[in-house]
Image (cartoon, rainbow, N blue to C red; front, side, top):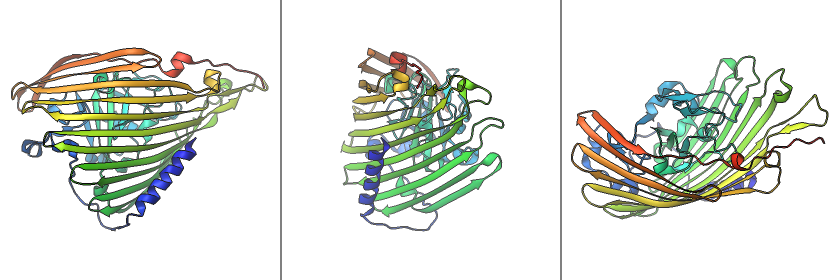
Length: 452
């Protein structure tokens, strides 16, 4: 199933590469880029303050102390100094988070406030605004956290708390938004290699090219180790990621992204016939297109379309019963389109609203006792208003209305008041509602074992 995506990914790189290749073997430049979406909502004060901007909580760019919820930002300096090798390891630094390092459930996990289960299905994970939770792993987020190399990440925004009002299903315990670096900041060649105890073997290479209104980046990396001592936990993560940033004219910007991920890992326990040591593999790929248009000084629109797919292999014989095998393999895909309109209504009121449609398919005879694809469609309408009542008081009001083809309708509202008590001190008070609809497996799982 990955073949069509990889062919399209390769054709995309070849086509864009024909624009021109200008490689500079120089240190990475320091630059600042502001998209059209942000240009209408930033003021001089935003550039003169040390308070960072948060892009993902309400879908409006906001100062950290004005977001409708508690946010932790992991920036590039923190990533560099942490010594972490993947995003799940980084999230140990976020208050209230629990993380794992094992690949038993596909990839290391992270979750918030005690909601730690086998697949971490109560979190929403975004990579450059694209939802990467796994339809196959019951809505799990482990493989999504492995989408891009740490070297390509600009920062990670983590909302610690419910955010179904902005992102719907899966955002019950919070949202992790991974933001990658602009290609203009990664021109030239860069490579890294590290090795250590426990079989640690990490390698990464990146090339960035282009100039002016068009720049590109291609990153290839691998990371692996032997896992926990005494276990069958060896693992190898291989990734390829491509990004292009194109300024079509003064009003329009286009971003193209494509990538693939492969996770090969040992699973199972020694001495357990019903969970025997074995090899498993997960392969995934994605394509993403983002287009932004500036409609004037006070408004813009953003369109996004993406396709993702994954294939999983995990099977082993049940030795006590000749001819009986356990199999957990299958595949899934997702397609998403969204449109968002951001508007400054007045000096004190900003609005964002839009809609999204997501189509998911899951196929697995071992899990569902059928070869037919199980389909779930999500239709979403969302909106959020920020009203600056005074210099000290900011009100955020928003909601998400969602219709699922198998779970029906739901509405997730939020109302939050931020009070700047004093310089550097903010109190938040509010109420919100979140939800997590059952996954395809929770609705339709039908596991049966048969002798061959």
